[in-house]
Image (tube, rainbow, N blue to C red; front, top):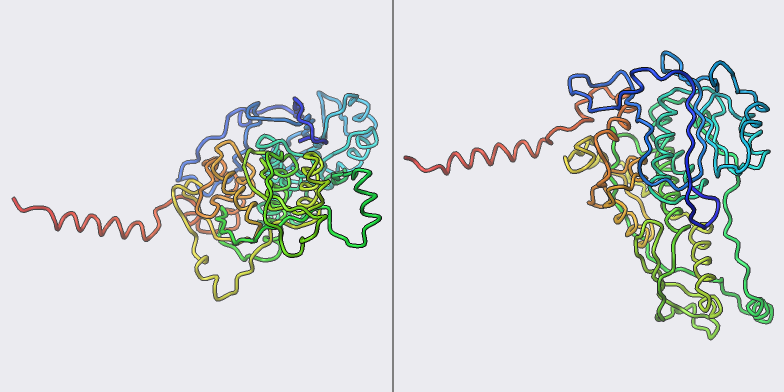
Length: 437
């Protein structure tokens, strides 16, 4: 999580208020089948591991005895929830972002932003420790998975919060969830002087660059109970995937470019068409067909910036494919496979997105350390299981579903009916073919 395009070595300071109980010290482990559905949330342990690139300060309020809510900032016997007191304790150099996990933290956040801290995450109202833990785990998972801007990382984690905490009624309204103080980053491009002069003298207009790519439909399997694919659910998933792809492109690097056949609308002596090979933030390689002025292609850094701006600021990359009621029957039953989300229940969602974006998602699904797909509940991308999905992730995500879904056996690993019937047929066939002695 960074504020610029420069990679730096960063640290995280986490301050947790209150006493640590024995229950909190014990790392979460597998939950026996006999104990499901769970009555307590499997709180993930905050550990120092994985790749972390932001300078992040995380302040957690006092955990109350019943674990249902988070309290004020209390250090020792001193309550430091007053904006003036807290802001006086934080001095330069400031972190890239401060996350306040305290109730009614808007004034605290405003006081920190006034000191010059660019991004502050806060909760406007009181909230449950379950919702807080889910959002925090999503946020940390994103920043550990890739070098991400604070804005993009928040959007992705907030989409996860909406998908699981709000959709399953642990939080009654998205307005009661976490918020971000800070402006969306802009990609500022200053065209060369000679290019500006050419544009003033030219009567024809063509955008700085134009990216050509066909849209494809992609099937995703989402971990959780089957649900109505309403606008709220689909828009949350769209926002999360758009933020994920923005992270990949915001840190992309131009590797190579070669001349390509121009499109009909670009047949002009002032317009050049090239195939540009780029490497995204997580080292996925994709090719883009790009048209633009010769001056733009002459400068690699300028071309790279134009590509980032065109993709991130001018388009919504991912859109849900609305399926008619007649076509939903295939996704009505939960889908299970031991290779997908440790055998937990999943359901289908279809998305349309650029072909290059689909290639990136399939690449990321195979990365064992990449957790940003997991926080959105995406367990399979067009037939490719998300390899970083483990049982602990399943338990954390399905905690919210089991509170709303009566039959927990539908949500957890079991052999599908077709698999059981095949096993019986196989056994029957082997017995019939056994030679008589």
